[in-house]
Image (cartoon, rainbow, N blue to C red; front, side, top):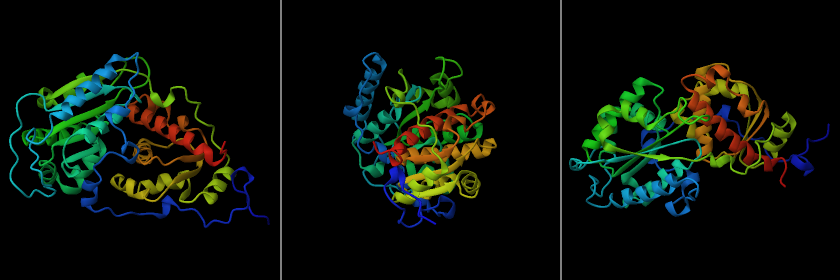
Length: 367
Protein backbone atom coordinates (compact mmCIF):
# COMPACT_ATOMS: atom_id res chain seq x y z
CA UNK A 1 0.00 0.00 0.00
CA UNK A 2 1.36 3.44 -0.90
CA UNK A 3 1.94 6.10 1.74
CA UNK A 4 -0.69 8.87 2.04
CA UNK A 5 0.30 12.23 0.66
CA UNK A 6 0.76 15.39 2.66
CA UNK A 7 -1.29 18.50 1.72
CA UNK A 8 -0.72 19.93 -1.77
CA UNK A 9 1.01 16.72 -2.85
CA UNK A 10 4.22 17.67 -1.05
CA UNK A 11 5.25 14.04 -0.55
CA UNK A 12 4.56 11.00 1.61
CA UNK A 13 3.88 11.43 5.29
CA UNK A 14 6.95 10.46 7.30
CA UNK A 15 6.49 12.49 10.50
CA UNK A 16 5.51 10.80 13.78
CA UNK A 17 1.84 10.34 14.50
CA UNK A 18 0.11 13.59 15.56
CA UNK A 19 -0.80 14.34 19.15
CA UNK A 20 -4.25 13.67 20.56
CA UNK A 21 -6.25 15.90 22.89
CA UNK A 22 -8.22 12.83 23.96
CA UNK A 23 -5.04 11.27 25.33
CA UNK A 24 -4.41 14.17 27.68
CA UNK A 25 -5.69 14.53 31.25
CA UNK A 26 -3.81 17.56 32.63
CA UNK A 27 -3.57 18.41 36.32
CA UNK A 28 -3.24 22.13 37.00
CA UNK A 29 -2.04 23.43 40.42
CA UNK A 30 -3.88 26.42 41.84
CA UNK A 31 -0.83 28.68 41.67
CA UNK A 32 -0.69 28.20 37.90
CA UNK A 33 -4.29 29.44 37.63
CA UNK A 34 -3.23 32.66 39.37
CA UNK A 35 0.01 33.07 37.43
CA UNK A 36 -1.83 32.69 34.13
CA UNK A 37 -4.22 35.55 34.83
CA UNK A 38 -2.58 37.74 32.18
CA UNK A 39 -3.76 38.78 28.70
CA UNK A 40 -3.85 35.86 26.22
CA UNK A 41 -0.81 35.43 23.95
CA UNK A 42 -2.60 36.98 20.97
CA UNK A 43 -2.81 40.20 23.01
CA UNK A 44 0.80 40.28 24.25
CA UNK A 45 1.76 43.14 21.97
CA UNK A 46 -1.46 45.16 21.83
CA UNK A 47 -1.42 48.71 23.12
CA UNK A 48 -3.71 51.70 22.88
CA UNK A 49 -1.49 52.94 20.05
CA UNK A 50 -2.15 49.75 18.05
CA UNK A 51 -5.92 50.04 18.33
CA UNK A 52 -7.24 51.54 15.11
CA UNK A 53 -10.55 53.31 15.80
CA UNK A 54 -13.08 53.28 13.01
CA UNK A 55 -13.36 56.92 11.86
CA UNK A 56 -17.09 56.37 11.47
CA UNK A 57 -17.42 55.29 15.11
CA UNK A 58 -16.44 58.18 17.42
CA UNK A 59 -17.23 56.08 20.50
CA UNK A 60 -14.11 54.02 19.76
CA UNK A 61 -11.82 57.05 19.89
CA UNK A 62 -13.55 58.25 23.06
CA UNK A 63 -13.05 54.85 24.71
CA UNK A 64 -9.30 55.01 24.07
CA UNK A 65 -9.11 58.49 25.56
CA UNK A 66 -11.03 57.50 28.70
CA UNK A 67 -9.07 54.29 29.22
CA UNK A 68 -5.70 56.01 28.82
CA UNK A 69 -6.73 58.40 31.57
CA UNK A 70 -7.99 55.56 33.73
CA UNK A 71 -4.67 53.70 33.41
CA UNK A 72 -2.69 56.83 34.25
CA UNK A 73 -4.65 57.13 37.49
CA UNK A 74 -3.64 53.65 38.64
CA UNK A 75 -0.03 54.44 39.36
CA UNK A 76 1.65 54.11 42.76
CA UNK A 77 -0.54 55.62 45.45
CA UNK A 78 -3.59 55.47 43.21
CA UNK A 79 -4.81 52.12 44.53
CA UNK A 80 -4.17 49.60 47.24
CA UNK A 81 -1.23 47.85 45.58
CA UNK A 82 1.62 47.56 48.06
CA UNK A 83 4.36 47.01 45.48
CA UNK A 84 4.85 43.41 46.60
CA UNK A 85 2.87 40.42 45.48
CA UNK A 86 0.35 39.19 48.04
CA UNK A 87 -0.38 35.95 46.22
CA UNK A 88 -1.74 34.08 49.18
CA UNK A 89 -2.70 36.86 51.52
CA UNK A 90 0.58 37.87 53.13
CA UNK A 91 1.50 41.43 53.89
CA UNK A 92 -0.33 44.43 55.26
CA UNK A 93 -4.07 44.86 54.91
CA UNK A 94 -4.97 47.02 51.91
CA UNK A 95 -6.22 50.53 52.20
CA UNK A 96 -9.81 51.44 51.60
CA UNK A 97 -10.67 52.46 48.07
CA UNK A 98 -11.03 56.16 47.38
CA UNK A 99 -14.47 57.53 46.63
CA UNK A 100 -15.79 57.67 43.07
CA UNK A 101 -15.82 55.21 40.19
CA UNK A 102 -13.28 52.44 40.60
CA UNK A 103 -14.08 50.65 37.38
CA UNK A 104 -14.93 50.88 33.70
CA UNK A 105 -17.32 48.68 31.78
CA UNK A 106 -16.87 48.34 28.00
CA UNK A 107 -20.25 47.71 26.39
CA UNK A 108 -20.24 46.69 22.74
CA UNK A 109 -20.82 43.99 20.15
CA UNK A 110 -18.68 41.16 18.87
CA UNK A 111 -15.32 42.04 17.40
CA UNK A 112 -15.27 45.81 18.01
CA UNK A 113 -11.97 45.51 19.86
CA UNK A 114 -13.09 45.41 23.50
CA UNK A 115 -10.57 42.74 24.48
CA UNK A 116 -7.84 44.67 22.63
CA UNK A 117 -8.72 47.73 24.73
CA UNK A 118 -8.98 45.73 27.95
CA UNK A 119 -5.55 44.15 27.37
CA UNK A 120 -4.14 47.57 26.46
CA UNK A 121 -5.41 48.87 29.79
CA UNK A 122 -3.64 46.00 31.56
CA UNK A 123 -0.38 46.75 29.74
CA UNK A 124 -0.67 50.52 30.31
CA UNK A 125 -1.35 50.32 34.04
CA UNK A 126 1.90 51.30 35.82
CA UNK A 127 2.31 48.30 38.08
CA UNK A 128 4.26 45.06 38.10
CA UNK A 129 2.51 42.19 36.28
CA UNK A 130 2.08 40.44 39.64
CA UNK A 131 -0.16 43.30 40.75
CA UNK A 132 -2.47 43.10 37.74
CA UNK A 133 -4.87 40.28 36.87
CA UNK A 134 -6.63 39.56 33.58
CA UNK A 135 -9.08 36.75 32.94
CA UNK A 136 -12.46 35.84 31.57
CA UNK A 137 -15.52 35.63 33.79
CA UNK A 138 -15.32 31.83 33.55
CA UNK A 139 -11.63 31.81 34.54
CA UNK A 140 -12.45 33.96 37.56
CA UNK A 141 -15.17 31.57 38.72
CA UNK A 142 -12.76 28.68 38.16
CA UNK A 143 -10.20 30.46 40.35
CA UNK A 144 -12.76 30.75 43.14
CA UNK A 145 -13.51 27.05 42.73
CA UNK A 146 -9.82 26.18 42.99
CA UNK A 147 -8.83 28.49 45.86
CA UNK A 148 -12.08 29.04 47.70
CA UNK A 149 -13.82 32.40 48.09
CA UNK A 150 -11.87 33.83 51.02
CA UNK A 151 -8.50 32.80 49.61
CA UNK A 152 -9.39 34.37 46.25
CA UNK A 153 -10.23 37.63 48.02
CA UNK A 154 -6.88 37.56 49.84
CA UNK A 155 -5.04 36.64 46.63
CA UNK A 156 -6.44 39.49 44.57
CA UNK A 157 -6.81 42.20 47.24
CA UNK A 158 -3.24 43.42 46.82
CA UNK A 159 -3.69 44.00 43.08
CA UNK A 160 -4.02 47.40 41.47
CA UNK A 161 -6.24 46.18 38.65
CA UNK A 162 -8.52 43.26 37.83
CA UNK A 163 -9.70 42.95 34.22
CA UNK A 164 -12.66 40.65 33.53
CA UNK A 165 -13.26 39.81 29.88
CA UNK A 166 -16.65 38.55 28.68
CA UNK A 167 -18.64 39.15 31.84
CA UNK A 168 -21.62 36.78 31.83
CA UNK A 169 -25.06 36.89 33.37
CA UNK A 170 -26.16 33.42 32.24
CA UNK A 171 -25.92 31.81 35.65
CA UNK A 172 -27.49 33.77 38.53
CA UNK A 173 -25.37 31.90 41.09
CA UNK A 174 -22.11 32.77 39.36
CA UNK A 175 -23.25 36.37 38.92
CA UNK A 176 -23.92 36.73 42.65
CA UNK A 177 -20.60 35.03 43.45
CA UNK A 178 -18.55 37.35 41.25
CA UNK A 179 -20.52 40.43 42.29
CA UNK A 180 -19.78 39.64 45.94
CA UNK A 181 -16.11 39.05 45.12
CA UNK A 182 -15.85 42.35 43.28
CA UNK A 183 -17.43 44.15 46.22
CA UNK A 184 -14.71 42.80 48.51
CA UNK A 185 -12.00 43.82 46.02
CA UNK A 186 -13.41 47.34 45.61
CA UNK A 187 -13.34 47.70 49.39
CA UNK A 188 -9.68 46.66 49.24
CA UNK A 189 -8.93 49.39 46.69
CA UNK A 190 -8.65 47.24 43.57
CA UNK A 191 -9.63 48.96 40.30
CA UNK A 192 -11.91 46.98 38.00
CA UNK A 193 -12.48 46.79 34.26
CA UNK A 194 -14.94 44.52 32.48
CA UNK A 195 -16.29 43.71 29.03
CA UNK A 196 -19.24 41.76 27.71
CA UNK A 197 -20.65 40.93 24.32
CA UNK A 198 -23.86 41.96 22.62
CA UNK A 199 -25.63 39.63 20.27
CA UNK A 200 -25.44 39.84 16.48
CA UNK A 201 -28.50 41.28 14.83
CA UNK A 202 -30.48 44.39 15.51
CA UNK A 203 -28.99 46.80 18.00
CA UNK A 204 -30.76 46.56 21.33
CA UNK A 205 -32.56 43.30 20.51
CA UNK A 206 -31.89 40.87 23.36
CA UNK A 207 -28.48 42.39 23.87
CA UNK A 208 -26.29 42.29 26.95
CA UNK A 209 -26.30 46.01 27.67
CA UNK A 210 -24.77 48.23 30.30
CA UNK A 211 -28.15 48.46 32.04
CA UNK A 212 -28.19 44.68 32.51
CA UNK A 213 -24.65 44.64 33.85
CA UNK A 214 -25.16 47.51 36.28
CA UNK A 215 -28.46 46.08 37.51
CA UNK A 216 -27.04 42.62 38.18
CA UNK A 217 -23.98 43.80 40.08
CA UNK A 218 -26.36 45.87 42.22
CA UNK A 219 -24.38 47.73 44.87
CA UNK A 220 -21.31 47.90 42.66
CA UNK A 221 -22.95 49.94 39.91
CA UNK A 222 -21.75 53.24 41.37
CA UNK A 223 -18.18 52.04 40.97
CA UNK A 224 -18.40 51.62 37.19
CA UNK A 225 -18.37 54.05 34.32
CA UNK A 226 -20.00 52.48 31.25
CA UNK A 227 -18.33 53.08 27.89
CA UNK A 228 -20.36 52.22 24.79
CA UNK A 229 -18.19 51.01 21.86
CA UNK A 230 -20.03 50.87 18.54
CA UNK A 231 -18.85 49.18 15.36
CA UNK A 232 -18.96 46.04 13.25
CA UNK A 233 -17.16 42.75 13.89
CA UNK A 234 -13.57 43.46 12.80
CA UNK A 235 -12.98 39.74 12.23
CA UNK A 236 -15.21 39.96 9.16
CA UNK A 237 -14.22 43.37 7.79
CA UNK A 238 -13.07 42.71 4.25
CA UNK A 239 -12.19 39.10 5.03
CA UNK A 240 -13.26 36.10 2.94
CA UNK A 241 -16.02 33.80 4.10
CA UNK A 242 -14.97 30.98 6.39
CA UNK A 243 -13.60 28.09 4.34
CA UNK A 244 -15.80 25.06 3.80
CA UNK A 245 -14.75 22.00 5.81
CA UNK A 246 -12.10 19.79 4.23
CA UNK A 247 -12.24 16.05 3.67
CA UNK A 248 -11.18 13.55 6.32
CA UNK A 249 -8.19 12.67 4.14
CA UNK A 250 -7.05 16.30 3.85
CA UNK A 251 -7.37 16.88 7.61
CA UNK A 252 -5.56 13.66 8.47
CA UNK A 253 -2.80 14.41 5.97
CA UNK A 254 -2.31 17.90 7.35
CA UNK A 255 -2.16 16.57 10.92
CA UNK A 256 0.61 14.12 10.02
CA UNK A 257 2.53 16.72 8.02
CA UNK A 258 2.33 19.55 10.59
CA UNK A 259 4.66 19.68 13.57
CA UNK A 260 2.79 20.03 16.86
CA UNK A 261 -0.60 19.17 15.37
CA UNK A 262 -3.25 17.17 17.20
CA UNK A 263 -5.72 14.87 15.48
CA UNK A 264 -9.00 13.78 17.03
CA UNK A 265 -12.40 12.64 15.88
CA UNK A 266 -14.95 15.24 16.95
CA UNK A 267 -17.39 13.02 18.87
CA UNK A 268 -14.74 11.32 21.06
CA UNK A 269 -13.24 14.73 21.81
CA UNK A 270 -16.62 16.00 23.03
CA UNK A 271 -16.85 12.94 25.30
CA UNK A 272 -13.32 13.59 26.60
CA UNK A 273 -14.11 17.21 27.46
CA UNK A 274 -16.73 15.92 29.89
CA UNK A 275 -13.94 14.19 31.85
CA UNK A 276 -11.66 17.25 32.06
CA UNK A 277 -12.58 20.27 34.18
CA UNK A 278 -12.92 23.42 32.03
CA UNK A 279 -10.28 25.15 34.16
CA UNK A 280 -7.80 22.69 32.61
CA UNK A 281 -8.69 23.27 28.97
CA UNK A 282 -5.81 25.69 28.60
CA UNK A 283 -3.38 23.05 29.85
CA UNK A 284 -5.08 20.55 27.54
CA UNK A 285 -3.77 22.56 24.59
CA UNK A 286 -0.22 23.07 25.90
CA UNK A 287 2.27 22.64 23.06
CA UNK A 288 -0.45 22.21 20.42
CA UNK A 289 0.20 24.31 17.31
CA UNK A 290 -2.77 23.15 15.24
CA UNK A 291 -5.95 21.29 16.13
CA UNK A 292 -7.23 18.89 13.46
CA UNK A 293 -10.74 17.49 13.82
CA UNK A 294 -12.57 14.95 11.73
CA UNK A 295 -16.31 14.43 11.55
CA UNK A 296 -17.53 17.73 13.00
CA UNK A 297 -21.26 17.46 13.67
CA UNK A 298 -23.88 19.36 15.69
CA UNK A 299 -23.31 19.14 19.44
CA UNK A 300 -25.94 16.91 21.05
CA UNK A 301 -26.87 18.88 24.17
CA UNK A 302 -26.31 22.12 26.02
CA UNK A 303 -23.79 20.81 28.56
CA UNK A 304 -21.60 19.55 25.74
CA UNK A 305 -22.05 22.81 23.87
CA UNK A 306 -20.93 24.90 26.85
CA UNK A 307 -17.79 22.81 27.26
CA UNK A 308 -17.01 23.28 23.57
CA UNK A 309 -17.40 27.05 24.01
CA UNK A 310 -14.69 27.06 26.70
CA UNK A 311 -12.34 25.03 24.50
CA UNK A 312 -12.97 27.42 21.60
CA UNK A 313 -12.08 30.36 23.88
CA UNK A 314 -8.81 28.75 24.96
CA UNK A 315 -7.84 27.92 21.37
CA UNK A 316 -8.66 31.45 20.25
CA UNK A 317 -6.66 32.94 23.13
CA UNK A 318 -3.66 30.89 22.06
CA UNK A 319 -4.14 31.49 18.31
CA UNK A 320 -4.29 27.77 17.56
CA UNK A 321 -5.66 27.16 14.03
CA UNK A 322 -8.45 24.58 13.71
CA UNK A 323 -8.66 22.41 10.58
CA UNK A 324 -11.82 20.35 10.34
CA UNK A 325 -13.89 18.00 8.23
CA UNK A 326 -17.62 17.43 8.53
CA UNK A 327 -20.07 20.28 8.98
CA UNK A 328 -19.18 24.00 8.97
CA UNK A 329 -18.77 25.56 12.39
CA UNK A 330 -21.88 27.71 11.95
CA UNK A 331 -23.90 24.49 12.10
CA UNK A 332 -22.55 23.34 15.47
CA UNK A 333 -25.45 24.65 17.55
CA UNK A 334 -29.16 24.07 17.07
CA UNK A 335 -31.64 26.89 16.49
CA UNK A 336 -32.97 26.23 19.98
CA UNK A 337 -29.51 26.82 21.45
CA UNK A 338 -28.92 29.94 19.36
CA UNK A 339 -32.21 31.39 20.57
CA UNK A 340 -31.78 30.37 24.21
CA UNK A 341 -30.24 31.87 27.30
CA UNK A 342 -26.66 30.93 26.38
CA UNK A 343 -26.88 32.24 22.82
CA UNK A 344 -24.18 34.87 23.25
CA UNK A 345 -21.69 32.14 24.16
CA UNK A 346 -22.57 30.14 21.06
CA UNK A 347 -22.31 33.10 18.72
CA UNK A 348 -18.93 33.93 20.23
CA UNK A 349 -17.74 30.35 19.71
CA UNK A 350 -18.91 30.34 16.08
CA UNK A 351 -17.12 33.64 15.43
CA UNK A 352 -13.88 32.44 17.01
CA UNK A 353 -13.85 28.98 15.47
CA UNK A 354 -14.56 30.54 12.08
CA UNK A 355 -11.53 32.81 12.48
CA UNK A 356 -9.35 29.86 13.52
CA UNK A 357 -10.63 27.76 10.60
CA UNK A 358 -9.64 30.56 8.24
CA UNK A 359 -6.15 30.58 9.78
CA UNK A 360 -5.87 26.83 9.23
CA UNK A 361 -6.58 27.00 5.51
CA UNK A 362 -2.89 27.54 4.72
CA UNK A 363 -2.14 24.00 5.91
CA UNK A 364 -4.08 22.58 2.98
CA UNK A 365 -3.61 25.40 0.46
CA UNK A 366 -0.45 27.41 1.25
CA UNK A 367 -1.18 30.08 -1.38
